[in-house]
Image (cartoon, rainbow over the protein chains, first blue to last red):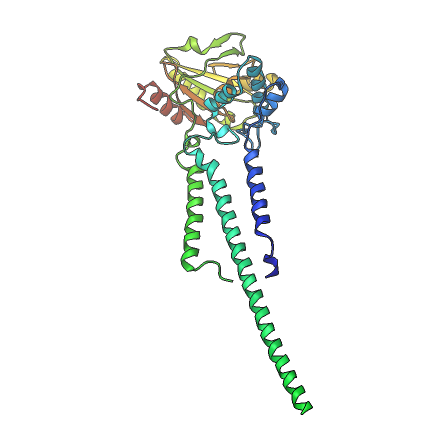
Length: 167
Length: 182
């Protein structure tokens, strides 16, 4: 039971940090001031290579990925925004070309459910540990009471035996 | 230590199963990925090809005709497999307002020329010097074939080697008036 003697506040703190890390990971970084190379690279990692297994356009060495990187660059140089470039690829290959689903319609489930799962899991673990801690405390106080009772009985017996020996 | 009773365990199990089912639905249920191509039913992306006989071919020049747009490469074995069917179908449809266009992609020019002398048909073959047409059409591999109707709309896409029967099916379907597709 001593394994459960982690302070509840520590558990909540770790849980909070965990949630914050996941939250910040999904925030997009402002691309102001980035050059074309950086923007091309960034966009190439937002697109999946259609002919590769689980590789983004940025990671793949296939001919198609090479063509796609060239097109990203050309479109950025022509003054298209990141959203316009992504929309162009979606119009040709569909939404499955995006490395992360856009947060709209049914896709919201994909964004929200992992968070809901983590929160529910965290609540479950916290409740379990609270209950374990409480039970541990009850067990501890019961042990102390029993020990004190036993000590008292022992002391009584010693006193009685001393009295008997004196008399 | 008993944290949950039997009913509690059932509730937790139901919650977990619901979350997993919702996740599965969000990933696989009723999504665009089941569609063959997002271009179907939309205006075909325009292109200008440089043909192997040194001419220029624009899609806009083919308006009013049914277009079979076939993407191929010399290193592609299924492309060789379909070459005969493409040639015989072209012979069959060339006088019926159906234009066959071959687009060579991801290839070496000399290999493409050799391929054409051996397997090339009588129909127009070319390539996009900017190498953009394959991405405009969302091509993922070769052979892939698009069927464009006389109004310039993409009506179908076929992935894999064609046969004469497949070509007949799609060409006749493309020549029919378009139903209201979403």
